[in-house]
Image (cartoon, rainbow, N blue to C red; front, side, top):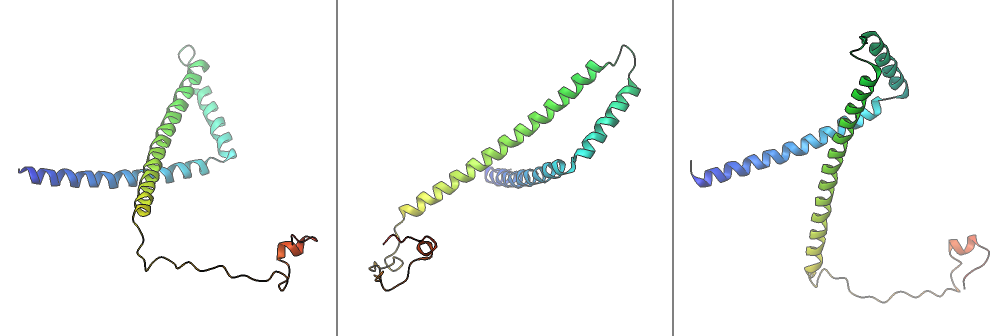
Length: 147
């Protein structure tokens, strides 16, 4: 296979990977939102009761005691917490990249001078005699005018 063909193939794979990463992040966001919305207080209590009942029924004396169950629950919760932290890190990095790109685009836009036809002509501000017009709404709302 020629080098140019390999380069095109790698570039295509990188593009596919970028699209898949975006889709995965979108799906993960939807999943986490649905997961959070699904845990109502009633469901939390029911899962706790069911888990306690199952732990009580499956407890074999000497092999599985309460301390082991607590250790397992702690391990699983720390696993979920680290997964959430990793996801938050990825989202924050993506947001930082987006902000950097926006800042770069803004810098480029300010560096390019606008054409003379696009620039608005400087016009003097119209002067209105303040005595001829009534008070502004904010002035009318307060009993005293700033004039």
